[in-house]
Figure 1 (spheres, rainbow, N blue to C red):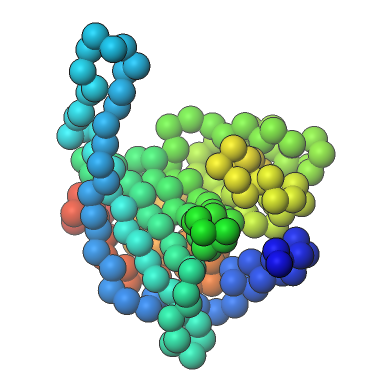
Figure 2: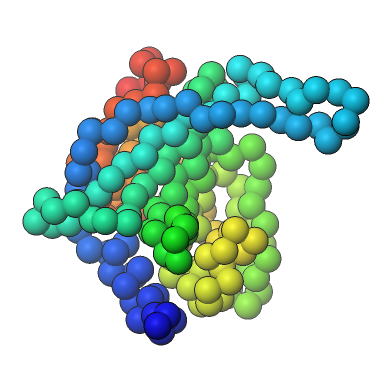
Length: 192
């Protein structure tokens, strides 16, 4: 029997709002990158300059018990410090990982809010911004699909100047204590 939408939304709100901590010490890993130019006569392009890395963070509840089916994912460029970094809060739902909140740090372009008038948001958000659960849950389950992609976003109060500051914003936004102790990407050695 599928969960009632209101029950599901309350569960997700609690997961975000309840105090959490990092359960295990994660390590950065490289993601497979293949750019396919869709031209059958030319092979797919692979480039180290387009290499992405990720850090998957398992969380624990306030009693230090691992939370099953809940994680935070950091995605960054392997060779481009402090550019276009995305952090998602994900839950396992219907046998797939579902992003219920996302923070985009130093994105390449502005985010356009599709429903800005309906929800009193800025039409465009320049710089780092958060796709908060509360701003998107008002749209229903469609906001949490890959096609919906959490369309509503609000600007952050200030731009983080280091990866450590990014982790502090993530910790405050997702209520994760000691988030700023996460390992930094190798490119961040001089950006403490």
